[in-house]
Image (cartoon, rainbow over all chains, first blue to last red; front, side):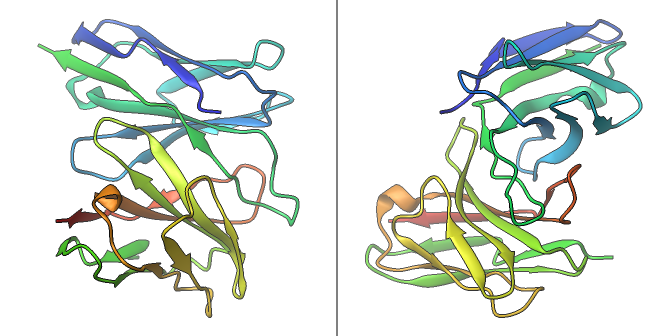
Length: 115
Length: 113
């Protein structure tokens, strides 16, 4: 089942902060965050694993509440380059053959940063 | 380093035609994926592969076929194209570790008219 993202869209002024949420009805193994600019491919931002391990860009932070099956992406001191659509991808079962993820993506949060 | 390369970038098909979307990666990744993205929507997994010779269905496999004869290539075949297959198709690959990052190609924009 597709994770639910909120808000659907947000407009920020440069320097402001934003939080994007991702919620699933299923128990999650991992949450992945990607950003996609118009007409381009999604670009990796952050991975959070059940158990607390995470990996991502230095200027972006995120949290993963395993009990609530929720993740939040925190964008601080936003820049014009942060504009785009943010997707969370959730994985309920690490592929047992030794790696890889079957991700189910949310419908995205459109973020626009203005001067 | 080219990463994930998809061809063609754009294609218009007539209803009932067939075509193959090409995907190649040069990162020696075991895992490869095909997604489709409809306008204003998230990505949906069509098929994935865990290595050469091994493929499995994703969420929306109907109307598509895949094969993986080499580590590098993972083509997606559309048979008897339908308007519902109008979409942007993304190929991705990842290394087989827990903290997997999926690297995406630039996409193929397909219209079926």
